[in-house]
Image 1 (cartoon, helix red, strand yellow):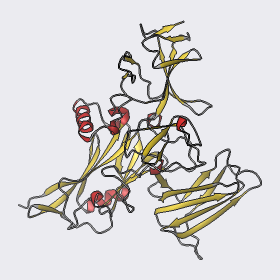
Image 2 (image 1 turned 45 degrees about the horizontal axis):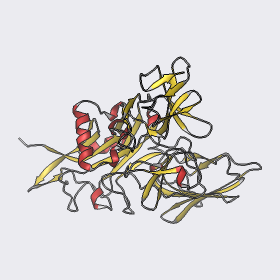
Image 3 (image 1 turned 180 degrees about the vertical axis):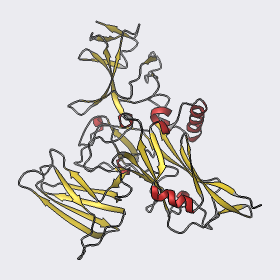
Image 4 (image 1 turned 135 degrees about the horizontal axis):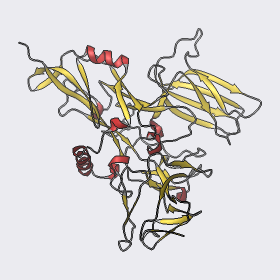
Length: 423
């Protein structure tokens, strides 16, 4: 009787700081590898981590056919999933039972299950284009850092508007905006330790038709949209109006040839120029089949990659040992934690909490933005003599956006002895 062998081909972990960070000053992705793995395994052992509560991860219909053809099993696990493939022993190595062709793309959808998932997940809320996240092991420029599937955080772009919590780089530093801003002043940004996390650079996935929105202060009445691939012009769309353009529909279902040809799904560069000095350039991935506005995004794993670390197989076509474990690193959204009285009374800090909370219109607000976390945290000050205290953390449905662009998380409570008093 013939023996049938299956081995892990690759694994994808979706890791979220909201569940994994132990406190606000030591983000999970800023810790050494061994410390992160220890925390993750402890959370899994105590049933405290299951990303499928927030995201449903599944192969697309086209991918499911590929998996069946190549005898690959999709196996969900609490951190994400792994793909197991039928293999033939080849000495000490293993080869796919059915050889994988040169170009195969395995596509998986990330559908949101938790309606408040975006509340505690860092990401821009108002974007110029309705792009979804796309995570892939393709790395043609060699810029990614294994095992993260995220693109590098983009450098600060002069004139661009950044929401609170949005990321940019300045030299070798990754920074997050502590206010909504369009300038690079140090007071508006702070350096973070989290490395290779998801950012707006990963918001790539768009359908062939989509709307492009200009900011309210853009003052654009004429604009040109140019789609390029590998530096070659694919199509140009011109838009104009007698009043400022707010949102325009772009149709890239066909290219600019005569007669026009159907645009192929794949990566492109969209360049935008308009009057009053308006300029924008972004990488995008057009796919009408893969895009679904109800999803958080998608994962594409290719069987080969120009970056050896991201390739699923060895150069000779064998399975890697150990198998590659890719990571999608989701950063928590930062907000000001605002404590309010359940009965509408004015709250005041005590000596123990005054280093961490400041008065604001009868409420108490954290002195600086804090990452959303699933568990209560210990407030700590740089001064070791300052008392350390535990205060309630905000629920996941508590996000509030003020007119000044600041993000708040409201926590309603009664008196907490020695920590908060009611006036």
